[in-house]
Every structure is written in C-alpha cells, then in structure tokens.
Amino acid sequence: MNITALERPASLVERVCQQLAELIRGDSSEEERWLPGERSLAEKLGVSRTVVREATKRLEQQGMLEIQHGTGIKIVDRLHRPLNDSLSLLIPDMADRLQQLNETRLSIEPDAAAYAAQRATTEQLKTMRRIQKQLENAAEGPAAIEADIAAHHAIADASGNLIYRLILDSLADLGVSSRLRTIGRIGKRAAIEQHEAILVAIENRDPEAARAAMRSHILAAGADMDLPALKTKTAK
Picture 1 (tube, rainbow, N blue to C red):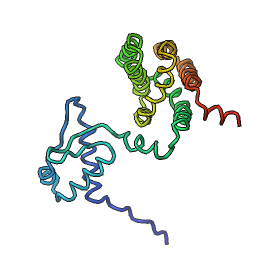
Picture 2 (cartoon, helix red, strand yellow; picture 1 turned 45 degrees about the vertical axis):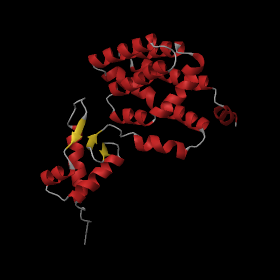
Picture 3 (cartoon, rainbow, N blue to C red; picture 1 turned 180 degrees about the vertical axis):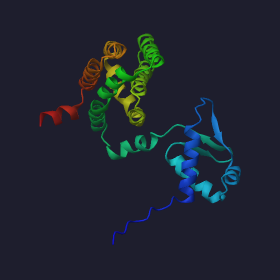
Picture 4 (spheres, one colour; picture 1 turned 180 degrees about the horizontal axis):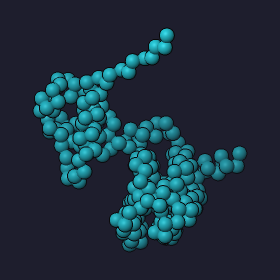
C-alpha cells in the first residue's frame, strides 16, 4: 500500500498572514500606509480579532508591519530587521563582523553587478548615474557613506534579484560601520573611482567587467579597513 501524507491545511492565522502580505506587496504607493483597524480587519476577513492580532504580530516580527498601540497598524518595509538585529549577538566582535561582511559581499555583489549589466533598465541606469553624482558631490562623512550604500543597493535592484537587495538591506547597519573604516579613514576618492569603473561596465552591458570591477572594489575596501582579525586569520 502506497500511503502518502496529507497536506496540512494552512491555519486561519497563516491564511490571514498570506492575504495581508499579498495586499501589502500589491500596494506600491510611496506615501505612508496604514491597514484598517483590528476590528475592521476582522470583519472584512470574517475571522476573530484574536486571529487578526496574531497574524499582525507575526508580520510585525517579519518587518512588514508596525503595530502602534492607540494609533493603528502601519505598513513598513523592514524585512531585513530580524537578521540585522541578530548579527551583534551572533558575532559579538566587531572586527570579525566586518571581516565576515566583506566575505559575504564578495560572494554576492560581483554577481549582482554582472546581472545588473545584463538586466538594468534605462531608468535604473539613470538612477545609478544620479547616485554616482551624489557621491561625487557629497561632503566627506555621513553624506558620502549614504551615497555609497545607495549605489550598492541600486545595483542590487538593477540585478533583478530581490534576494540580493534583501540581504544587503539586512547588512545595512554593518555596512555603515564598514564604510566608517574606509571612507571615514581615507576619504571618498577611492570609492568614487571604483564605483565609476563598476558603473561604466554596467552601462556598457559588460557583465564580466562589472563582476571584476565590483570584486576589485570589495577587496580594496577590505584592505582599507585594515582589520587585525583579518590579518591574523589570513596569516594562519
């Protein structure tokens, strides 16, 4: 007898989570967005307020909602927060975190740049060029770091792979610390030149050149950070 397991039906809470997530993803408005109140949601969905409460709590933990007691349920884009918040607990030593950040970026961003060279739309190319101008014109410090991060996120967007962007968002806070050790120590000139090489390769639709330029940029950033932990581990 060939007996197969029955598929477990989704619980009411899971179904409400799925429906609300689809609703959130389908709303591309850039204005501040709010869900209807708990009572109204329960009535519209035909479920109890307890089910709505549990579903919205789950989506809040996942970074899609922010429950503001006494105000309402706000739609947010913080899908990266669960990982971001756990990094300092998982890797308590900052030098180790920065080293592992660079290793992770080397595994992801060169391919993201190559895909961007193949897939970037005209509008995305304009966005990347605009961000490059912002980096060139930015004052040293926070403004330059913000433009630097925005450039990498724009490349991830242009790659057409949303997982790349989500991973980079998850590492955003650590990315600031990384750039404080690079741009903060040696200035933005090197970043400008390296970003320009990446962008020109993407604009020329040259995936291999984009991949090589991004890899060179990340390796240079690792060297500029001058991490003791990196030197120790490399020497072993």
